[in-house]
Image (cartoon, rainbow, N blue to C red; front, top):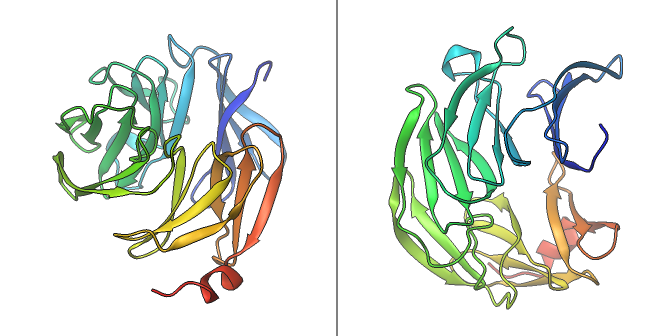
Length: 242
């Protein structure tokens, strides 16, 4: 990879790693041998920005989905001689986040819409009305968390104020009804249908959040500074009253 790596994802069994990068490459690596298996040099016409693993129930062997800065979404089977399975052009601006729920692929776009795509039928299911602000992670640039009902993605169910003045850049589901949100500001918040409190401060803002598999640790990646910080979730939650 010659340019900045945008995202990496492990396969469901942990044997492979997928990556997308600023030079438009989509690559897959074998974890055990530490070797690159395949690399698609021009995965999109524009620069890829987000990526998601797809469920095993997806038809046509779809393994992963990628999306670029122009709103294009593609699904892939990297084992096939013709790896592109389907392409969507239903949203107009950068796809900031991709996520799956059952056989649905959800896409949050800077055009202010949430798109839901049927992986089995390989077509758009619903596209929401524009939220009036960029959707970064189903949280938006005005600092609210938007809530949708499953399979009713066209209409907003609820909007929760999170007190992130610079907007919500990333979030993680900690457990049922408890969500962690972070921003280019310095703090991390705990939110169900109301704000529970602040986890702590990260000088320079936060670009990404991750939770360890055993849910013991929260990991934050700096926005202004290339730093990684580990947070003890057990200690944090012991001070929060649900």
